[in-house]
Length: 125
Length: 210
Image 1 (cartoon, each protein chain N blue to C red):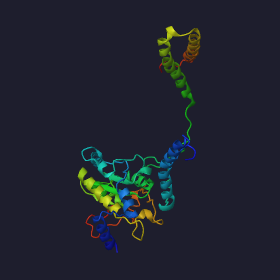
Image 2: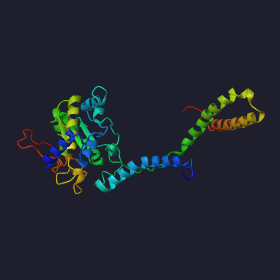
Image 3: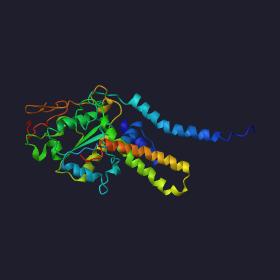
Image 4: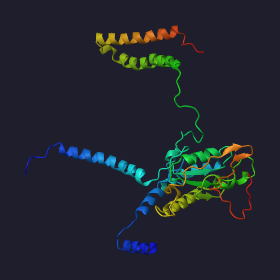
């Protein structure tokens, strides 16, 4: 007997097996598609799928930047609730530093709320 | 020669030796994994949906995976009345499917226009524009009829040769995978039919009226 087998060698063997297990079907499918199946592209076939209708226009359309207001208000109300709940539960056990950090966080959120209030986005239409 | 091979195969199987050909294996795989397109047109579609549900269970034939995109579908079941407004979309969806692709025309409307045949707005059978593999009569056909059509299609797939002059359309490079999409004209669809696909039966009592 020579040297003892390296303990990681089994893992390497399994790794190679796992990769081969995944890639062999893919390679076979690729081979089949490239070599055996006839390639028949066409204008209709390669067109964008729109439930059978002809697609119109470009898919690269802009999104309205005015939606940022919803993002900010969402952050203020939703993220605030998510962090306030654990803050309230752990309040009695918190150190002064943690409490101050949380208050700074709250200040930032309240700042956003005041800004949104000042911008008059909290009123219904 | 083919009969001799078949006899030899039977002889071998009697002795516990299983033999097959690449063609048989390939077609066996194909016929048991036909994925239809999620696509329904009228009341026949309700029967088609019932066929896929637990009572009739189309999954037994490997065809329960209705694909929401033509890119992944092998079969389009034209289930219901094809109006002239819908026909271009049906042909376009068929064009967007990769080959090999198959068509089942389900119900009286899809095969001939059915009770709406004389309607100004109804196509008199989808076989005017795309090649139909299996026609099912009925109004609407029961799920058993659709399953029968499905088994007929499976048989058809099973018998397709991979090579030679009788090989199916998808293996012939020069044959197109797309069919012309009809357009709206002054008097219905133009052209009224694709003459490469549509062959009127001799002595057809229902004359072609567009």
